[in-house]
Every structure is written in structure tokens, then in C-alpha cells.
Picture 1 (cartoon, one colour):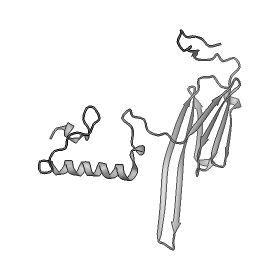
Picture 2 (tube, helix red, strand yellow):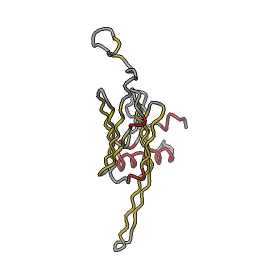
Picture 3 (cartoon, rainbow, N blue to C red):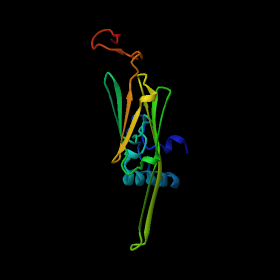
Picture 4 (spheres, helix red, strand yellow):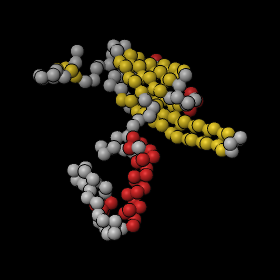
Length: 168
């Protein structure tokens, strides 16, 4: 059996032609059915896409103006003590752990979930590290990063249909 026999699609991302079930190896049939089962139960949204991207959590919003960069992260069900913020190498790192435990003695079951999360937000501006503020309220983390007044803007303005010019 060749490796390409394990891939369920052809080179042009169309399904590969099916063999008759008599000629098919039993492990290949099991492999295909397990993939179908996982796709049906979890959907393809939990799997990495062909370009390697995976949906990132937590969701963040980054807004920048002349004086500051404001980052808002949605962290429902996460405690403030379980979140770590780090500012280094021109990037903001939001990391932590989420824990969820529930128990129903009447029905006789309990559930536990533990997971780590991490988001890195590159900062195109130099910030005043001593003036950074963070607030966590109702599952929403808001970080305010004041821009350094003496820091040059990194980047340039790109004109549509023309040449780019230095940012002013």
C-alpha cells in the first residue's frame, strides 16, 4: 500500500476515485470511516486547515490611535488569577489556563476540562512598559498600552494604484 492511498483526496482536492470494497485493505476502510466519524462529530472547524491555520482562542480586538494601543480579549469562564500577561520583544503575550468542573451527584456524573491558551499580538509601535494597564471584568480582559512619544512609526503607507511613501 502506498502513502497516497491513505489520502482521501486527489491532487486537485477532489475526492479520490473509490476502489471497490472487495479490493480495499481493511485498515484503509477503518481509517476512512474514523475520519468521517470525527468530521461528522466535531466538524472541520476544530481541525487545522490546509494552510496550517487553526482558529485562535481567545478572540481579541486590537485598536490603535495616536496615543495608545488597546487590546481587548474575550475570556469567558476564566478567572483573573489564571491569566498571565507578558510584554517582550515588541509583542504582547496573553496566556493562561481554563478549568471547568461540574458534578451532578443526583445523576451520578462529573465533568472536568483543562486547557491552556496563548495569543501573541505583535506591536508595531514602541510602548511605555511602565504605563501599561490591564483590567479584567466579566470575562473581558482590556489592556491599554501607551505609545512611546519618541518612538518612530514602523511601517509605511501604501498607496493603491501607485508607489508607496514613508508614513508621516
